[in-house]
Image (cartoon, rainbow, N blue to C red; front, side, top):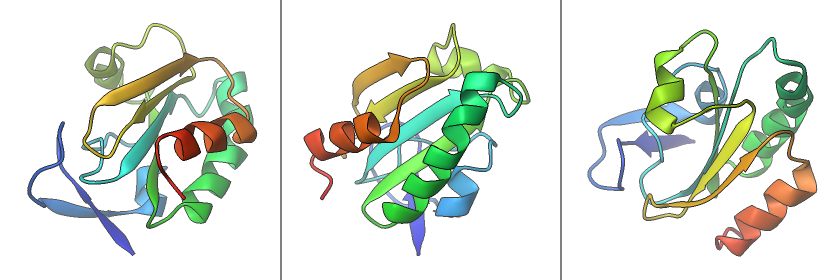
Length: 124
């Protein structure tokens, strides 16, 4: 399955991105149009970020087609830190299906907490 990626608020489709591309660490156009989106902003080399990696990989598979789970490596793509207003990593940002930021967490976030937040945002 592919997801439509557009900048900012959900509007028209522009490109398609697979769930595995969303967690590649590369910059993405987020949030995803019409979907609850969680962006984990960190680095492949940061210790707490490494602890998040298996959780993000699992969730991206479990929620494919229902929510967009993304990862951006801000050590490789430093401009993304400013774009998202990041001062510490890892930071998780949750957007509703309309593309509005609803919640932001700094530090390691366990799977159960992420699932609870996705559920709270209406993901079944």
